[in-house]
Length: 516
Image 1 (cartoon, rainbow, N blue to C red):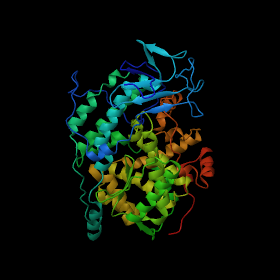
Image 2: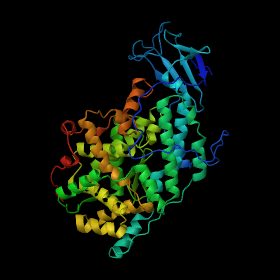
Image 3: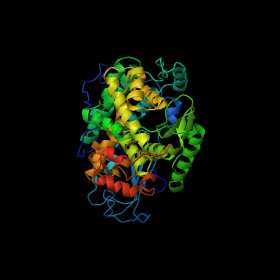
Image 4: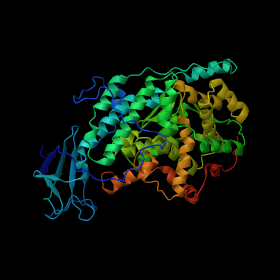
């Protein structure tokens, strides 16, 4: 293929030159990864006949067909000594056209400069070209996780009806929660995973990262197969970790320190919340015109969530009026923004999350609530009560015992206690809700140690992966975040952030009671 400007084109499928990267942990320290290969592993590569749902295909982040790097004043400079391998010291123009196949076409309007490598007469002009085979694996892993869609597939379909039945029973009969049928074949998804030739990725950091992500997706698939059985709990523990004693103690301390709060009396409907959400998206579009607006009010989900860049709102939900803005900073300003920032990166795993990212992502979203003044006592008590509920479930308590303990022992309002309890028992037992308090605790520790937030905004990643992502940024494989979240710039956010950098615990986030 020859570009329209007549410049030379180079195509390569050669093995990439390894680059040494510093590798941190790829997730939680309490989540070991298995090295065993599945029984169908073999030299013959077989492709699944299963296709992703049409909706999932439409949600795939758009990869630009052409990435252009020019000099800083917007124009290209000519000259035979221009070196596209060093854009900072000698600006020039390099165009990289990423095709759907594994071929990467690199065009340059200059001759090869000093320091450029040539392999078999072909010019290696960018770090991205060197990683082309790795980026193909990255794209396939992303596609498979989209098909699996763990978040939606463990969300009850009938939560509103189940609550009505539970209330009519005078809180005496445990609810029956229905989950949606899987719209993918787990066996074929596993086969697709282990057909990926991760062993051919020469870069050591990305090789380790891809193996860990493949393992995580395999665990997600197994967990979904085990829904509504006792085995589901073990899959949840492998994905999200357990409740360690320090975290349990922090939760109890919060519930003892913060007095019980009266239920809020002012609420907004799902429709009104959707209107507020669209307005928040438009605020981002005013600064970033290509920022997409994706808001859906759904009757088949029970919790507010972001799934692959879309804000999904349960049709039957009512939201506290004073929680609308904090929730928007949590969901749109963190989950959607990091998704869109990840969609602008060559490494598409940054849209769905690097291995073990959930804890850091939820901690960052809780931080957004605090910096905007929205982490009120009720919310802090809910985050703590979730940890307590997970601990009770791990200790063998059922739904009714958890619900009654939250109401009687911790004076959690009935409707809130219900929501906490069903999130913990769904599918056979889920420990995911402990990651919110654990995540903000680790974010606070990182801020006190001098960590910066900008790396965490590149996409969805874990704190332990900051060295890896920073190295890829330094090598210009990744780019600086496209969108800056609004919660960093609201009045008072900078002052609150500086206080946290001086050192703070989760209990220090309690700033006094609020009116009902």
